[in-house]
Length: 267
Image (tube, rainbow, N blue to C red; front, side):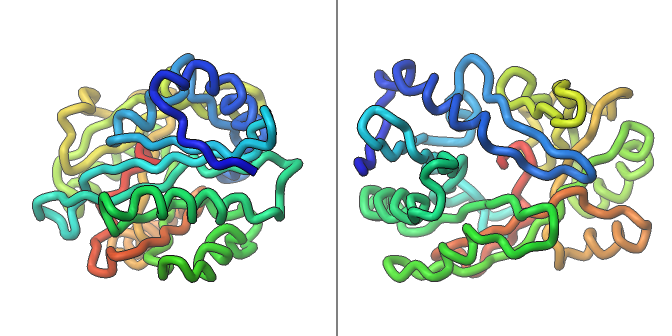
C-alpha cells in the first residue's frame, strides 16, 4: 500500500476516484441518513478551511482510503489570538479495505510528514447512529506514535426556520452575533430517504464575515453543534431540544482548548 500526498496539479486526476469513494460513505442524521457530495471541485470545501495536505492510500491504481490534513488557525479560548493546528478530516476507507487499519496508516504517515510544521491537531469523527462506540476513535486512542485524547463530544442540532427563530436569542446570549452560511455546491447532503439535497444553512458565530445570511430561511434546515458538557447543551436538553447526530473530537497538544469554536460548516 502506497501513501501519497495529492499535489495541487494532481487534483483533477485523483478527484474521480476520491468522489467515487465518497459515495460509499453513509452518515446518520436523526431518523434518516445522508451521503455527502463535494460538488464539481471536491477540494473547495477543504481549501476554505486552511492549507490542505490531501492524502490517498493506493493499492495499485485503486484508491483504498483518503484523508485531508488541513493546517488552520483556531483559538485556544474564546477571544484568544488563533494559533495553528492540524485538522484531520474526510477520513474514509473503501469497503473492500475495511479492518486493514488503513486509517491508522494514513494518520501515521500524515503525522510523520507534517509534525515538524506544527505539533498539535484534532480530528472530528461522526459517531454511529445506534449508540455504538466510535470504532475509529477507539483505534486512534490506541495510537502510540503520538498520544491522542478524547477531547469532547459534539451534539449536532438541526432545526427548521421557526424553531431556529425562537432559539436565536438563546444562541446569541451564549455565542454572540450569529449568521448563516450555505455551502450549496461545495458540500451538499443527499438524504437517503428521498434522494434529495437537504436545503441547509450552517449557523455561524465568531467571525461571521463570510456568512451574509442574517435570518433563518423557511424550507431550510439550520444546523449547529455544541459540546455536550457546555451549559448551552444542558439548556437545550431542558427545552426538549436534542441533537440529531453525535460526533467525537480527539486531539493532541490541545488540552486547554475551548471546543466551542467548532462549526458544523467545518465538519
